[in-house]
Length: 481
Image 1 (cartoon, rainbow, N blue to C red):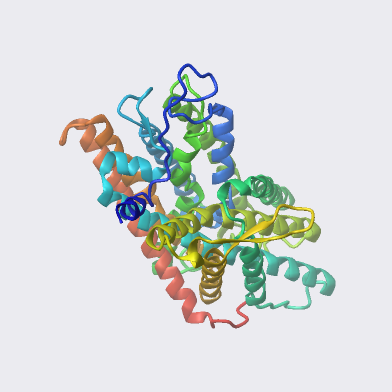
Image 2 (tube, rainbow, N blue to C red):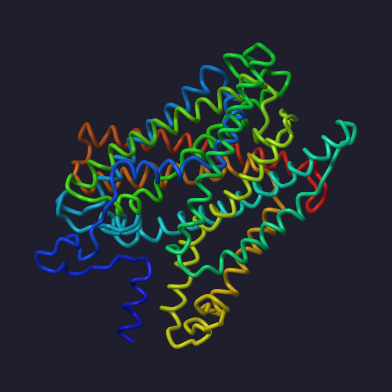
């Protein structure tokens, strides 16, 4: 009974404390193999994690805010993300920054600095966010698959056929693929999928940027205005809501704090991991911001007020159709991998909790060896197979009910930005450094957190208003294109 209770209490804690062999050059101070990560590997991990499908909505976001506010807001989000990431990097070790106890995950850091109650709150927000990302990626992939079909249809008919297609078959196809990939038991077996996904994300982002530049060169003009989409094109109320939604889109594009501690845990020392991570964060946020500015601004310059919600599927571009097909195929391949990278931590949490709760259940704990000719036997776990399949089916059904990439992406960005990127890093840093309440530094950090909370509420409100507006004209499970 005592062992059962202990295991249950350790469900949130994936860390392993071991005593290092004395004088060993192969192990770190926690007994794990020497970490070999550098500034450059950490930067690469962050850039890979950040530059994803969120980049496709930045032209739309810039169009809502205009030439002044659009780039300014992007810069402010990059600064806040960089600053709070440096605070978070100081929380990798508890106590001494060079030799203190390591926190291997984001929630380990929350537990060490803020206690068990905050861990549960953080866990709920984190896992709801991961579930939402699964929905968002299913929607985005179906839009890209439909865009390939539509692009080819336009090409064959010379633009005469309206080419309306239902998204649902593509969502179901994506879900079927994810059911198969979700049976990969562990996160560490997904490394090859992550590499493929990273290459694909740079491919489609670069295509979007290149097509935006080509469009500007072709028309010979920079479209857009200083204040964004004009009243008349949209109503005053829509202008306000869409500006708020743009904040969520930009927040979604910058979201990576939740995996920062895990990346920091790959970095070697000396120098201290926090110093290395500060440099890596600066490099990666600078590169990402430059890329985002180019994609968002060139997309807006190309289309002005008519900038589509998704740069590669909004059909501002029709030719070269084969290049659009390649870019959209890259999006689908990237999202197949990204879905697993984001959902695997949620899968692992549920399975560890179930195993701790019912340790004597063969259905949950027993692996059945399935022979595969030419390969190692596959370890089939019935609980894992059934629960992960149900999870993918639920995300697919919700996606079919709410197939609005922009609104869903903005809502995910809004809900994850303040708690995970700002609130917890700020509170952990205050606890770690023992900053006195009402001191100048404490007040500045609280003002930053409060301002970001207001932005998050505004972005969430704009996103929900967008979903409500879309639902008025959308017929669930119908052809809505």
